[in-house]
Length: 288
Image (tube, rainbow, N blue to C red):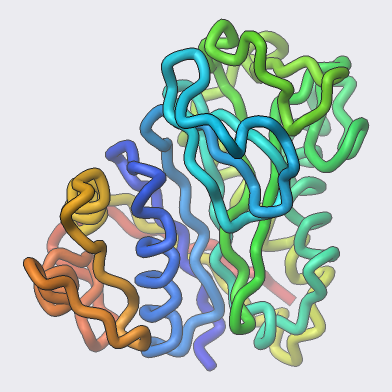
C-alpha cells in the first residue's frame, strides 16, 4: 500500500450530474495505484441537491428559485451548491485507513474548526444537525456516503454565496437554520484555506486512523490548470441522450464515447503518473 493521499483542486465548475462518475473515476485510480485516498476541492455549477434519506417536499420539485434540484446519493437533506462555495470531497479507502464513518465525519468538521482556531471566532459544530456554525449562522454542511470501503461526497463551505437564492428554502430541512458566509466573519483566500485545511485534515485523520503505518501517511498536493476529462463528463451528463461512462469495474461503456476515450482525457495515466496538465506539486509529510 502506497501511503500517499493526493489533493486535487479542480479549476472549472463541475456539473453535479457527473459527480458519481467523478467519484468512481478517482476510486478506480486509487485502486489501480494502491493509494490511500484523494482530497478533491471544487466548485459546482449552480444546483440544489437533496439527500437520499430526505422526506422533504423538495423531492417532488424540479426547481427552486429558478435553480434545478437533483437527488443525491449522500445523506442529509437539501443543500445549495454554486458560485462562492468551496466543496471538499475526501475520497478515502476507509477500510485501509481503518477509520469508522462517524470518526471521519468528526475529522472533516473538527479540521474546519481548527483551521480558524486562532481567529477568535465563535465557531462550533452540530448546533442543529451536522455542520459548522459561526455565531448562529451555518457556514458548512456535510453529507457522506460509504460504498465498497470508500468514502464519497463530503463538505461544502460557504465563502460568499448569494444568500438570496436560498430564500424560502429550509436549509438541511430545518426551519431554524440561518445560512451564512465565511466572508461575513473573516476574509480568507480559497487557496490559502485549502492548503491550511488539508494539512490539518491529514493530522486529524492520522489521530483517528488505526492504520498500522499511519505515521508514514503524506499528502501530495497537485494543482491543475484544467481537468479536461471532468469537463467532458459534465458536458456529457448535461445531455439527456448520453450516458456518462462509469468506472472500469462497472463494465458500462457509453455508446458514443468509450471509457478509453475518457481515460485519455484524464491527468492520470494507467501507470499512475500524472499528465501534462500538472502545474505544480508540493508535498507535506507527517513526521514521527
